[in-house]
Image (cartoon, rainbow over all chains, first blue to last red; front, side):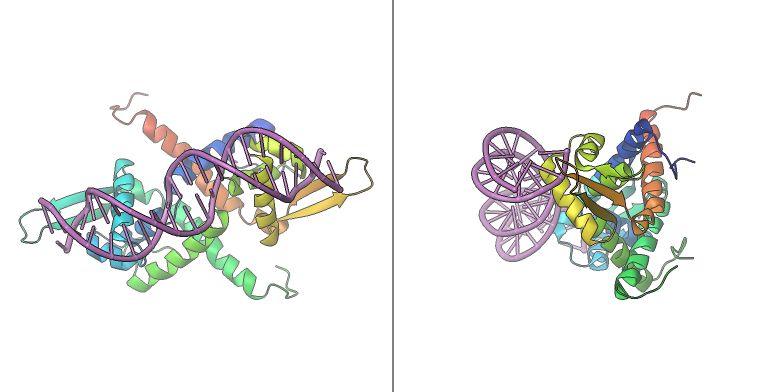
Length: 125
Length: 125
DNA sequence: CCGTATCCTCATCGATACTG
DNA sequence: CAGTATCGATGAGGATACGG
């Protein structure tokens, strides 16, 4: 259920769109999901994370991390005892609820890449 | 499999990010998914679809439909026999492979909305 | 190391008017 | 009806430099 396979009503679709858009609003943009993926392997410090995500600037990383924290997807921890200050970002439990979403996106992305390869091929499946 | 639950390696994450980004590139933006949802109930004509998606302008709809067709997610059919020209858009079989993705986004969006409601609540029920 | 401030560019999206 | 053309607003995102 949840996503009608054959004949969704007008209202059903409208409702579905709302939720989908909600998710997109939160996770959309270039960096949100990559950052979450980057944190999925365990806590990371700012610089580490920046290296992990690859291509992101400090400005964007900082901004996106704020957004994600506001939405409760990640948490930020400061260790002031260290000399040059250490900040650690951790994927919150709530952030892990995104795994199915990420997995779906990941799976489709992979499949799509394969699909493109033999674009003209016969194939069926 | 596919998305390591506990300790993904550096390389695994990088690979996952690529696929996720690929999907996002194709499906990102404000309208792609809503349009696909709008077509999930069956073929639609341009104007119908515009009404269905709600809020989209002719310009955006036209542009997005082109993108989606190029990627093989939908197909366009023109009936020139009718007086004022009728164009029908249909969700291609390949477009239906997105249903799991949409369903994931949809489910998370719904859950998130609920999550927000009792953000500070100590549960009620 | 961890960011913030500033400036800038470009893609996205919207409104309106118009054509076939 | 099915689109396209034009103009304009907005903001995401990048480069660089600097502060704590």
